[in-house]
Length: 329
Image 1 (spheres, one colour):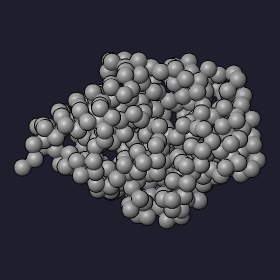
Image 2: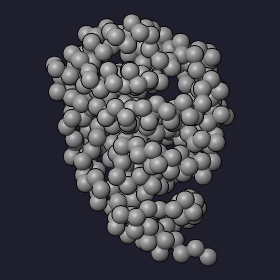
Image 3: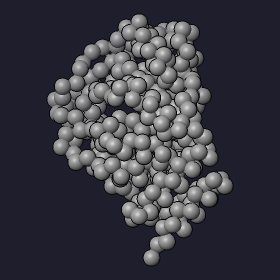
Image 4: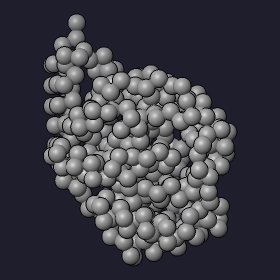
């Protein structure tokens, strides 16, 4: 019979002393009974405090090019393979991106991410966006992120030179479950972009989506892959099923299962920034505050790619009430 209390205490102490949780231990903790769940979340939160303090990374994004994506990711409303109500538009103007960055800076976001749909931008769009990002770097007091699909060495270098300090490229799910979610590119293609970003000195933001139909063990496998890759920032999205996609009828995850997942990600990735991202409002509901005291230390504020978020003031109040201090870029 597993002594869950002792296992949680042992894992926490080992991590705080520079050690690691094993895959076997993580699988055992996936089965933690309800009476020990709060012990697990408290341990994960102490690990967060030990490695990250009370600093909170709030980022904002703009969906700068929407829809018509040729990939067939099962969850995505922007895929051209789906019949969703997603807005479709080309790359927005530099002035529109600048205004969104200025707004994000004013309400206290640490970072601003420019996101475009599709596997990779055209040469013209990429060149135009580089000019805009260089302008943002000079004119707006906020750290710059980008998420522009697959990157080669040349584009990674040019983005870094333009002032982008962090690049987002999610792995989405575990290596073995990925073919069930996407058939138009491989898991390795995503890993290659993560490795290319690292080569050119940018911080890597890479996580995934839980609730796609994967097993709990597959969620843990994703976290261990991210740890092996040395990812700095890990967004945990929770599926908010979009009408017209292949996962439109997927059953939502229970809030406490999400909380447990956040805690395990913290134990597996003790020094990473862990952000609760898309779907948190719909899936966590009244448990958002608990999730942010279970190891997370960041969130996306101000809305997502194809869905709205909460009022920014409410999110900032949640951050303060949970005892965090907002980072500045």
